[in-house]
Image (cartoon, rainbow over the protein chains, first blue to last red):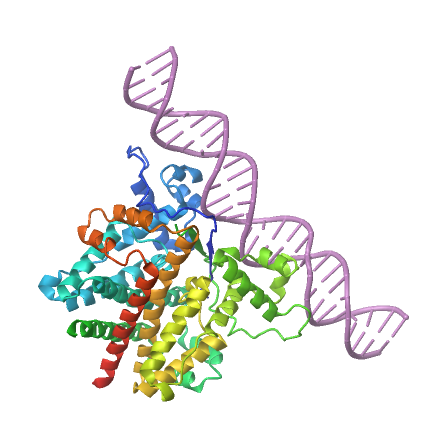
Length: 242
Length: 242
DNA sequence: AGTGAACTCGAACACTGTACGAGACCCCCG
DNA sequence: CGGGGGTCTCGTACAGTGTTCGAGTTCACT
């Protein structure tokens, strides 16, 4: 499963990001950066992170592989651009209308849904800088939300980081699981047996595996997410009390 | 920054893991699987995930590149093996002696430290199945811990997942930041200016960037981690009250 | 008509993981 | 002593990857 491989190129480059570099003067020709990013997102949605290659993306746009490099400096830069599109789909309800807790809760669920919808983004979260306009927008609204809740100073950012860490920390493995299982049909019994084998030395773990609910992991994970979210929000609320 | 690239091979393979497959009969020749994994971990520690290639690893062991495939089916499998070594370094104090809360807290800090020590593992967390003996051991001890705390049934696993999600969700971006900054000297002022540019449209975000503490991100992140951890543990404690 | 910028892209480079098959070693059995 | 036959090594080759380079094309404007 999880047939993945990564690589960090170790070129000692400067800290850069598409959002920081001076953008190329827009000239709106036939091909545009927007069009390229859109096609990239489609390709990523359809084939996953490994399914996107510059050559294939070029072919999809009826262009030579290396033509894209006119609009985009890097593949990484392209990924940054695509990544920001994902943030555009996350919604933060107005805390002044629904209260900060409901707002935070809705945001958490929105984040989870969006990432599940674009599984490739899970591999980018926390690894690519989220400095794009959409990511900034979400961060900004989150700050307002936690400020409305009563947090002040650095605590606003701490609360922010805590909630984000929880949501993504919970969702990332969920996606890995989904894609591993989604490749071919998922057989609960077979799966259980496989994991049981790995847990053979730990009777306590075996008990867990044989527990009710293991057969419907979808529902289980939803319950788990909610349990954790309520806990995190309770914990944050407690910070406000003192 | 973050000059990374990933790829998911899309071969529709079966769900497998080193820990599930029947292991090759051990014959202890000159080269051994243990030795290979040890060398791989060293290489990963030194050069990061992208610094490990089968050819280079082979060269380090004075072996041909493809010789390793006798001991290891895949690069992924090798990574699974290396990954499990990381779990071996995480410690869970006995909850019966120090109480579940201190035990959980110490574990969280231990996890963070270990992952920071092996930054490459952050790219594997939640993506590779953690079914190795060491990962199982930690999971087992965590179950005991939360059971000792008073959780029952699925709540044990929910609490487990919540804490893990928080710790890793907090630590993963921390590492991305570290490696991006570590490549060359980190200049606080320059960095601040760069991010400020990205946040130009959000005065609230700018306020954050100009806040005290932004110059010592190391200390800041430690405080942040603690803030979130206390919140999460408070939230979990609250689940016990009802 | 000429100039220079905007843009395209084929070829090449240096990598990657890994399948395959030929060979080397060595132990054991006849 | 003469072979198997398993264990193990590894050179070669293949199909990819991101990216650089430089030559070529198109086109608007002077």
